[in-house]
Image 1 (cartoon, rainbow, N blue to C red):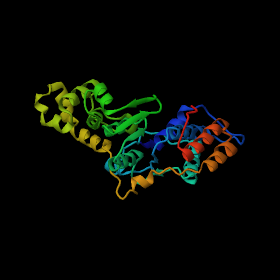
Image 2: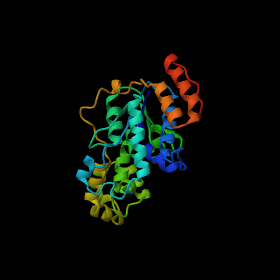
Image 3: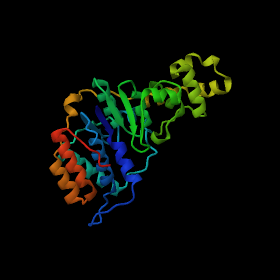
Image 4: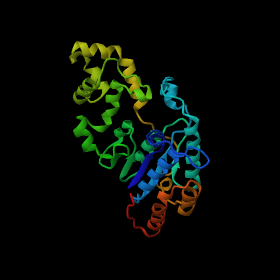
Length: 289
């Protein structure tokens, strides 16, 4: 199975979810600890291939469409920004597979690999936008809620196919990304509309059969609905490296141990790294979590 980790999303989870941690020099290391603990836990599953997907830079092609995209997000604290730089440099030094490209987001990296890889995939993320990719070969694992979801689970819970979460969110909006949606349309109404019409294009084709109190809001918010959908739809990154080669796992576990144990004193990870080194040498693994 090909593991695709929403690296940028998990960086934020690692920083904000864990208690404040500092090393002997007084430097913040909580995000570093949380992030690499997740990496080690994922590697214990012995995935065939593995890639960390990164956001690259603050401006993306979505900002070109909608300048207010993610404009509501607070500035990243310096103590977190410093840890992001450390994490990315360690990832690169250890040959842990990763990919990101200016103008695109981690979600677009995951989408591109998912579209190009002919095999089973596990997406590791808490980002609901990525659920649009669910199908009979792609599953979704939320590391915060510790829930695995497939396309059947999704449709049972939501009442419509995974691909139509794009249209659902286009109506509802997404406050975390500052995507407006249609003013006055809440979860219940959005869900009912998508269960009946599936996509916003079909909603507007059949707008005359929708009750007036809702159709009025939809008509007034039509431009916003389509603009929101264009922001939520995932992009294909051109000229991405061969996804099979990109996902090859060739990690330097000795160097990983030296960095995490000797430099950062994450003693609880030592046996896990030793076990992983044997696992990737001989192809067996026993979970230590």
